[in-house]
Length: 126
Figure 1 (cartoon, rainbow, N blue to C red):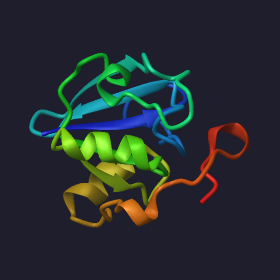
Figure 2 (cartoon, rainbow, N blue to C red; figure 1 turned 90 degrees about the vertical axis):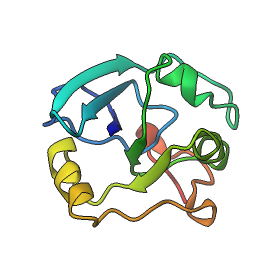
Figure 3 (cartoon, rainbow, N blue to C red; figure 1 turned 90 degrees about the horizontal axis):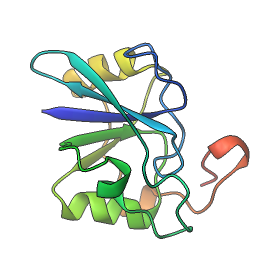
Figure 4 (cartoon, rainbow, N blue to C red; figure 1 turned 30 degrees about the horizontal axis):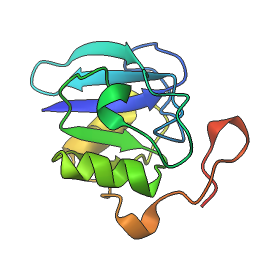
């Protein structure tokens, strides 16, 4: 299973998870079986509101799960159509959220829990 975490700064599993999927500069991707860590720049960071292209954002990297603080309805729908589950972050870092994911403690983000707009600094204002 490959898990993507949107982040501002890439410091591996110590990276702080970003508040919003589409505007995150980088994705840290963890291979759950091996704990291998890779990163990819968000190729779709500067998209128009509501026009996020998740596969472009991941630079066509295979991902099974996304863990994020907030996400727009269009991006959530696009990820779900690709079979990607989106879960809400419950801690600060990739490492902490990875442990919570493995424990089954990260809630799935449903359409009614998506972002309605962007706040200052890339945050989510829902």
